[in-house]
Image (cartoon, rainbow, N blue to C red; front, side, top):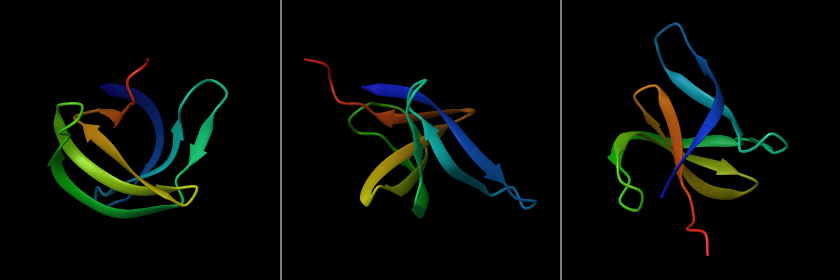
Length: 79
């Protein structure tokens, strides 16, 4: 399942986009410790495709996608 999120990012003069923070909710802002990889890829769990960022947050690797002008993550299904 896709969960669209707000992302604070920086765009360099050469057009490279680097995400810095994920705004998960009104009260939770997660700092991205490091971007480990950037590549075009599909989300097999949530569907959709775009630029996939492999990121590290709080010591754990996660995926973050930029799909055209929107950002999303693979969210866990609610029980």
